[in-house]
Length: 133
Image (cartoon, rainbow, N blue to C red; front, side, top):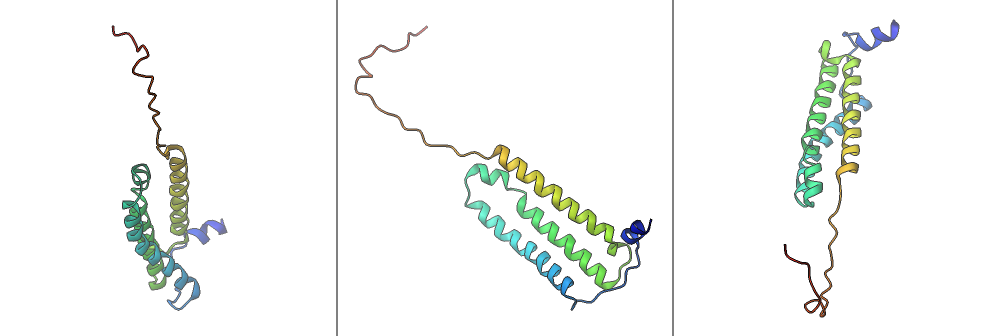
């Protein structure tokens, strides 16, 4: 019971922006938001299969970073129900599910079209072909 009250307690003691954990999480979240733009640029230079499979990565990175930054700011500013620890658990669980699904989809659907070589046989025009029906 004490663990549940630890997760769902809405009145957490406020932290400060100078706390190392807060700074690291803010840098990670802002890095995800900025990195999403670079993911979009990277995607334009990929082959069509990779481009199709990675179309949600940039927007997902941006929204994960934005929600994380919102949770950090609400914790530091002392906004009660948005600073619950359970919301961090949901956030981390959503990231884990998204990453696992994307890895499975990428592994199952990613393929590369191999170039085929056609050998022109000079005897081919003299050999009999298929019968036309």
